Image 1 (cartoon, rainbow, N blue to C red):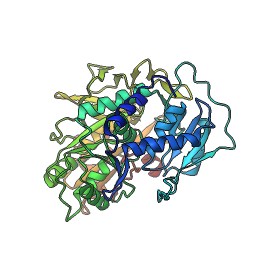
Image 2: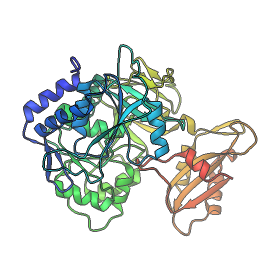
Image 3: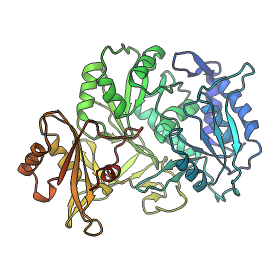
Image 4: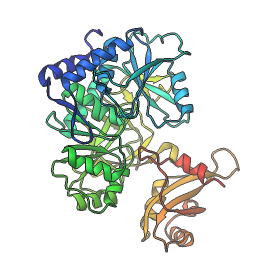
Length: 474
């Protein structure tokens, strides 16, 4: 067993304290695993991975499975490196991740998550025929690899040791006031950084039980929230926007904390949700490389992109303190050791991470106003898309606006401004262009504005300007 592993030590305290208490519920509210069951499952799974040597990378692609805690605990004990993979990724992306991270095996599960009378779950460990030698991790072998694409299309991983994962868990629970008396509702994927840190590690380290849910349809999520009496809902903006548009919603008397992460939350959505459900949404800003950064403790400001103040024991520093917006340096015990394969030392290392986001001060809170990579180069002039989006949103009938750059074909980084807008049926492109010309500088005015039924996002609720640029290329 890994000596003095802080997560395993925390787990031993959890299981000795909570024992037969419920740890994992299914979406009907039925107890799927007690804490003692999780421990027994970890011991059983250990026998399935006993053939692997310490430091081997094992990919886990099991969705929101009730035995995720057991799999991770057993892997910590065997000193394996866990690589969570989302079930929705393509086969090509999966194979690329396995190759880049030098995975030795893949843990998979049937979608029904069946369990037979002997207690054996449907988890299976498949050794890869192409697996190579174990990576030489040096003096600081990781416990977890978080897959991230960063600002490039090629995947790479972020290396975390157990003490960094535990630090992030503690910062989240203490900042948000989450205790073992709460019940987390787990519909966001455990395989994502957000789900891993808000669902899995709080269960292991602090005894916070969770519901595992696989039905992501908004009405089913609301029904399951009501049925399970969950008290904490870590969600994404896509869920909250969908909830606002539903009629005949169930009462949620036990729900006390709604969290939004994965993408900036619209102030209009936050306000509408508050009026409909009488619950504020607390924006949570973090990154795969460092865990949680900021948290909106109030939730009733209803400003676009507001992410609140730094989390407990997280320090931030503006790189350009006199600028209207700037990148920041993040320092905390949760910052990862670096990337794998190595690289990017200028933005991650030695307990410091520099996100690509541009932030601005908003009274005592911080607001995300864009990304370094979002800046559009128009004949040498730098255009911040957030300024144009703010102008478009002032037009009556515009519900959402995303601005991006498109290549003009006239040389490297020479772009023109374009926009996607979700608006009322009577709104036209010419109306919006005239409106922009009245208030913006000529180089800021979009060349084209595409009116769409919905702004495309991925399953995490994130919108990619790069994807929009490709989709609406000339």
